[in-house]
Length: 403
Image (cartoon, rainbow, N blue to C red; front, side):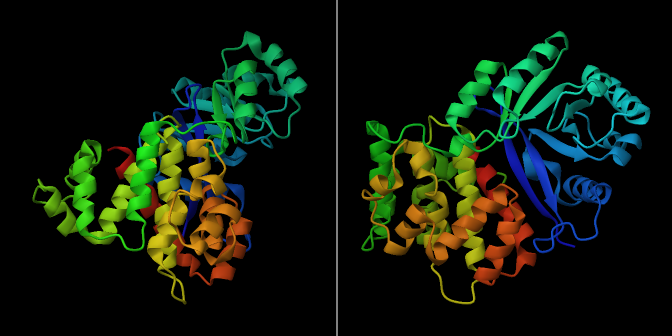
């Protein structure tokens, strides 16, 4: 059975990744057909730890996983490493004696406990006294209510996490309220849409991207571009000799690297490194999610029943958050890049076939399974291939972000 697994980033105050909440489905059609929460969580645990491997999904970060009442009572979280997971108690779990006893036991064993979608009630006080993290839905809970609850909880040793943070304004508001962790996609939105100059070093990266995407670009020019930029040269050789690729023989020259990867592979590599340079002052997750989108779009393109340029799909995914990287309008930024009209249409308005691939990758990363189902139907994609492609894209992105 295919396991559809997505992850939502959780940041600390410095916009560094603290962990990921894992989102699970057993298919894109008929969401959760005849499957209860106990079975769902059991499957995600089994597949994450035993089939896929937690390190492939979250690396060295925390995995936030929802547990139902039955799984909590049976102390199922304790069969997994306490250093790697945060036990999320769902909002609909009644805090009866069995639940409280189990959570207290797990806490004493060193497991972190988080209360999900928190709304204050006195009956929750026993769980509050055990918990490490309280999660507030920033979209559903009025700010005044959050402030009042935070005052009530000030006597407890708690850390607060704001969910569904979608803008920098919301991030800053939650920060001022006293939140330490932030879950959502605020990092993928521009902070300022006008009146901001692009730094000169970023203009250099834009020029590189412009050069290698020209229609009449010559393969022979790649070596010159790489040799002109020490950072790209170093990262290229480091990537080719990394454990991720597992090559038996060391690659020590740019010429050997060009031969090994070929024109398409080298252009992809330079595109990723230059795009990462554009996002160097942004949260690392911005470039990581862009690379995942790029690879996922390219892999999904291989399933198309009609011809579609997979290298262009890669660029669509990679450049999909260019506006957030440079805090400017996408339309303005694309003037600088010699991309096809189809690519520009996908990036600006998310329309056309390439726009559908981009929309799919964006919906998948957020666990928006209903939209994913519609888009796979529109694109006539074999959905059974998607879970494996997503894991491959995540691994590919992790290899690049370690350079």
